[in-house]
Image (cartoon, rainbow over all chains, first blue to last red; front, side, top):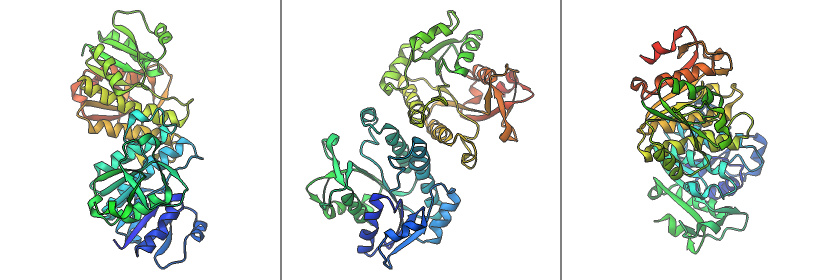
Length: 218
Length: 218
C-alpha cells in the first residue's frame, strides 16, 4: 500500500487520518472541496491536497482518481449534522456510490468505507435520533457490498474528540453505549487500509482493550 | 389478478386508482395510515380500506399482507413535497424497500412501483429541482430490480391533475417536457398490474397518442 485517496480529508476523522497515513509512509491524497483547506494539512512530501467534489460526475471523479494513481480509496466524508437531509441523500448516499463507481472506472480495487454503528440494524434506527443518516449509510454500504471492490466497512460507535487510546473493541456485545475517539478510528483506517485480510468484511468499532495493531493482523 | 394491495391509497394517484381497480373487478385493499381516510373511498365490495403504515417493521408489514391475501402490491406512496427530506429517506427509500422485503416474506410476487421520470438518469438530477427525491427513488428502484419479485417500474413525467386522456406515450424521446395526468398513470397501473408481459420492465410515461389498453398488451 503506497498511496491512498481520502474522500472527506478535511472532516474530523480525515484530518486525523492524513498525518497517520504519512507516518506509515503511505502517500495521502487529501480530497478537499475548498482549496483553502489545504493549509490545514501538514507540509509533507507524503501529503498532497487535491481538489475534489462529490457533487461532480462519476466521470470527473474517476478522472481525478486516475490522475492521482492511488492504491486505495478511503471514504470518510459526511454531510455533517449542520446540513439538511437533502445533503444526506446527495453526499452520504449518492456521493458515496458515485465514488465507488468511479473507483471501478479507474481500476482501483481497495475501498474503505467509514460507516456508522447501527447502519446494518434497521430495528435500532427509530430510537437512534439519526434515522435518515443511518438509512443513507445503510444503502451506501449495501451498494458497496454488491460491487466487486475489495472493501472494508467500519462502523464506529458514537464519535468523541478524546485522545486516541490505541485500543479498541471490535463488534462489541453491548452496542447501545459504544463510543470511540475519532483518533482511534483514524488509526484503524491507517492500519487496515493495506491489510487484505480485512477485505470483504465489516466491523463495528468501539473503545476497548485490544491494541489496534493486533486486530489489524486478524 | 383478483386482488391488489395499494400502498399510498390515499395519495393523489392512489385515490384515482382504487375505483379503477374495482371497475375491472379487482379487489383493492387500500392501505391508509389514518383510519378516517376510509371515507374517501367508494363504498364497494371490491374496496377494502386497511390500516397500514410504512413506519412499521418489515414483520408487521408482511403480517398485514398475509392477513389480506393479495396477488400484487402497488407502491404509490410518496412522502410528498410538504415534508422534509428525512421523510424522503424514511418513506420513499426505506419504506419502499421494507414493503418489497415484506412482499417477499408474505410470498407475494407481483409488485408495481410508481417511480419518477429521471430516477434512472443521474445526469438529469442536478437540474431537476427534486434531486433528493430522485436519489431516493433511484435507490429504491435499484433494490427492487435486484429482488426476485415480478416487478414493473413506472416512471411518469410531471404529474398533472388534468382529466385522463386514456392515451399515453411510452419511453418518449423528449423527456424534458414530459407530463401526464395522474388519472392516466392510475389507468396504466390498473391495466398492467395483471399483465405478466410487463414483468421485469421499466417504463417512462408521458401523455401521447397511443391508447393505454394497447400498450398493456405489448
